[in-house]
Length: 94
Image: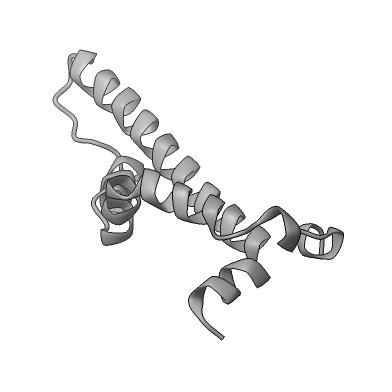
């Protein structure tokens, strides 16, 4: 079984996994930006919260860099890896 067969057999799982990662990374970016603004606008010189450190670590991970750098090729490959003939009721909704 090659990689394309695995993607086709697990199309929904692959799609949901990638969507969850992309949406999480976008949420982390937004929360980190909001927290950075709050910290810079406050009069105290407090450092970022532990959550901000976690967001930063996630955004600096190898997976985040890979997804960010390859977002369009990954999307194109997912779309082109399955033909209309291969999509069935069973593969779409296991």
